[in-house]
Length: 177
Image (cartoon, rainbow, N blue to C red):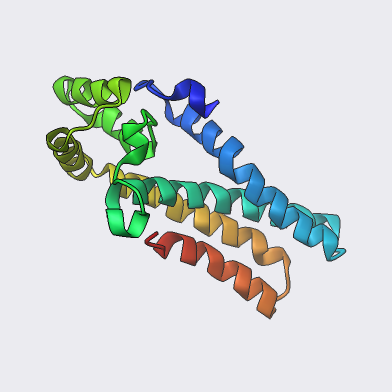
């Protein structure tokens, strides 16, 4: 599904979240669910773990997308804005397209369609992401989802395992690579 959207500057938030669900959230959900099943936990707890993993997976992918735009070559191990260079539109760019003036929208759309991001164009897009606070917007969504993930753990009695799972969303939000 994501490959069919590459090079399309008109990807919507709903479409982007569908990509994230298919690409990351279901994987995280399944892994968390399997852990509960293997531990012989009741169905309600297995379901809660699945929901925890699902929300955590979306938060993880949002942060990953943000790091692609805000990291360094050294921390990422690849060029900054690799997704944009490949024509992949992520939440900060979707929000930018919704908020920017027509000329800036056209410039970003051209970068996505042509998969061309020379340094001066990247500098302009980076400045626009800051100006329209779309990095903050996407990070706030990740924070919200991390909080929702933690809330699903409330079905478990306090224990070391629950504490470890509750710490993972915070790690996802704070990671820098």
